[in-house]
Image 1 (cartoon, one colour):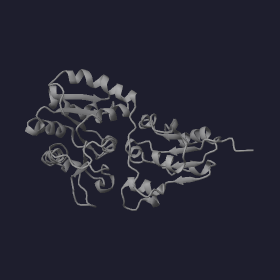
Image 2 (tube, one colour):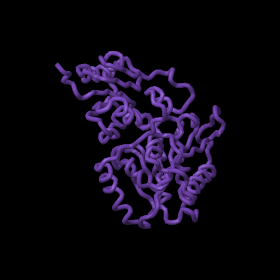
Image 3 (cartoon, one colour):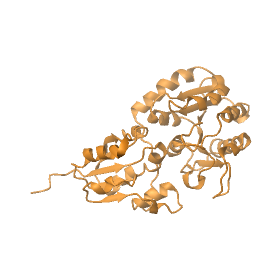
Image 4 (cartoon, helix red, strand yellow):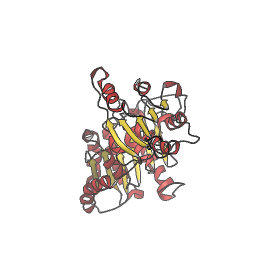
Length: 325
């Protein structure tokens, strides 16, 4: 008798972090190339889960909320062990990837980290011949959520104009440029002729109100508040209408880069050469520009960031470069 299982199944276990999920998002398209017609189940953390609701070929998203004694892994195992999988991809490098019957498995481990960009690491892990470009899968819900927030704000203030998106947050210690400097930066940009008529949009999650406040206060009527206004896909949809993006080394920085927005990432004591935004329209500014050396992000001055924003404007607004929107 012919095999009645006509639809191949793929389990993709990915990160609980927004940035890592964006970096590895090119795997979704690669699955379709390697397993044509596959239906994908994604297991990931709660914050990045909305990324996958509109991703092609994804039929189910399982949210992994951390539990005591690794109970979240046992819960996931119970949900997936009964399926006949054709491919299991585990970017968490967990034991789960080895405990689920499958025709083929791809399991991440530290040996793949050989000093190349993380996008390249996951691409090589998948056996791809070229880098798997990160991608954000926006849907009508995210666009509607964006418009519900933006429309009334764009109707007021100084009216519509080009938008500089700002993400003055990062949820790991040492990655956040001081909040008051974001306010100083906005004040400097408001006085800069090249930013006449621009709006300044702060983007972040519900817990990011405090670090975004100085930038919004400095922007005044030219500010747009998109902090805590929706899920991560709504924030991505808001960033998608921005002309430039400036943010700390964070998930939203990777979102902006994946959307093709001209992106400037601010770096302190982390490897900008490994974890900087990916793509031709991206730039970084670091507190120490020497590869392999570090300085606290507080060592990054307003003058440095202001100059980097002007350079971003020169490259992609005044003289649009290759791949610029």
